[in-house]
Length: 336
Image (tube, rainbow, N blue to C red; front, side, top):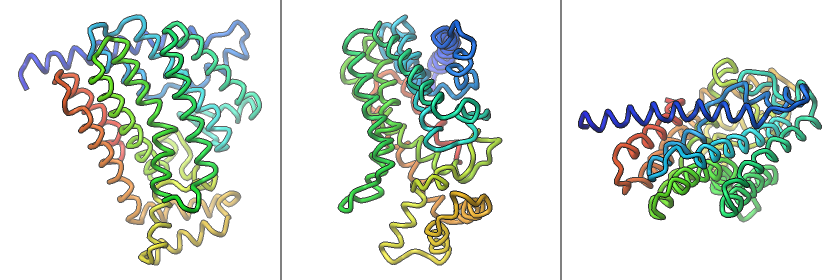
């Protein structure tokens, strides 16, 4: 890579860092409330930090147009992060998660009812900001939120009898995670004036890297401790949600190729003790950590990451393309 190319990548990183600092200021302003207790609850997760992955992608994709880092682009950053935060409030109620981002989950402090209403309030503020971007942005945001809710709801119901559980789960991930990542990419490129071809490429990139990211989270949910991930290991297991490692075990069982250790894991799950017995949950987590199914899930995450990078192979801006590829790798390198 030429010195000029590396210099531009360094410049992009500096610009995105500056942009994210502006986003933080705007988030704080949008989430502030003149009543202290409301200010505390609606700003709880935002102040806890987070990767700000979606705003970073908005900013990066805006570099593919001539109006990068514009006022509209910055507003879009706020929209996607607020929308993401709103889903976390609701997710933690559904999961009964004790922690989020290394702090107490909202419902543990204020209760389920207030946590749900706080999530609604955060989404309402996202809706107010997106209204300033025009009717097309409002429609895109509504469609994305529809997919987010549909994906989460479908996960609770599970597949129909005639559906492949693994394929169904991938679609759930595309809806509940990939949709907002894809919309982040779309907002950035589209609001900056990129061509339709470029917009479509980054949308496909976002959809696929969102799935890769969630598959990586499935691995992290089992392989990391709370101090590293900010989440409680085995949360999905406790809630009876079959993530990819469990689905692969069940798939092997249906094909008659499941090994003895895998059978023991499914046997533990069928007892239903994970909901109330911490020791049972810990035992299953440790068994899954030692099973090859975790590595298979890890490889699936890497495969979706490669597919995401292939979606932007035709981008002419080599530096932004390289930065997007690095962005993709960073999301799954957490499980290397």
